[in-house]
Length: 179
Image 1: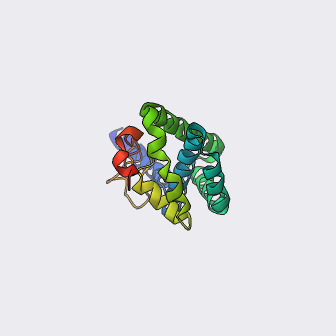
Image 2: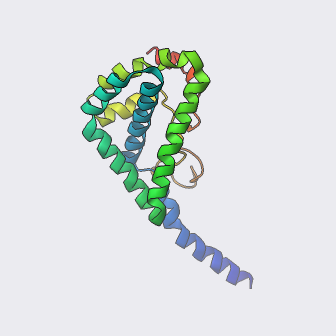
Image 3: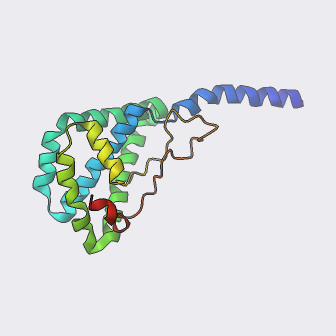
């Protein structure tokens, strides 16, 4: 009976192995998630701070990169979620916008002065990679808690983020805002 349980456990591990391996974020997908986080941050800032003109300029300049990033995120969820891909994608985008909105609310009157320079910094970039790097430099809030595919499950299990998803509130990011 014990050997039967071991056999079943081993079989379950073999079957689950590909699913675990696919629950990571590939490099191009990570860029897409970072670009989407930046776009969402700018959208929230545009609404909260009356920066519609700046946001529209950002969307016009990076329209192709933003669309490609969305497709990259959608591809990630198709690869990892199967039949629930659209639901998972919608939940991520909603969670992202809600987290960033709450971050702005916590910052209060400090939010707009902290986030407004981000528009010019974003517009100074030339492509999606530059936008993703800016999102990382500015520590743009991104609740994604999935490890990079380069990390092995032994080093970074699927439930452990490859970088901190719980980024500090906007009021704690003032040093980054002045760069």
